[in-house]
Length: 94
Image 1 (cartoon, helix red, strand yellow):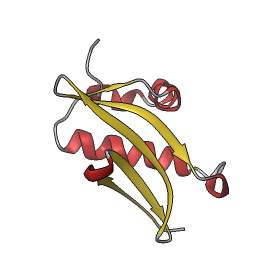
Image 2 (tube, one colour):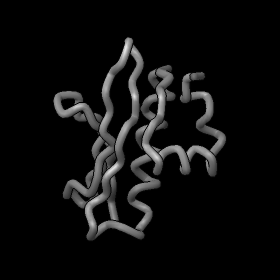
Image 3 (cartoon, rainbow, N blue to C red):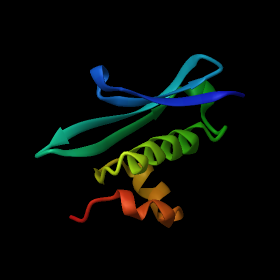
C-alpha cells in the first residue's frame, strides 16, 4: 500500500492518497495567523488500516519541517498527540 500526504491549500486540508485514491484528509482553518487542525476524516474502506495515523504523521512532519506551530481541536489528533509526544514541538501553546 503506497501512500502520500500532501497539502491541498485550495481546500484547506492535508490529504492522504493511498494507491492514488483519496483515502482521507485533515481539514484546517486559519485563525489570527495560526493554522487550526480541526477535523480528520478517513474513508470507511481505509478505516482500521493505519491510514489515519499515517495522515497525522505526514501532516505533522510537513508542518514541523516548515517550522510551523499549530493549534489542534480535532479529537483524533489530540489523542494521537498524547500517544506521540515527539510532535509536541509542532503544537502552539494555548
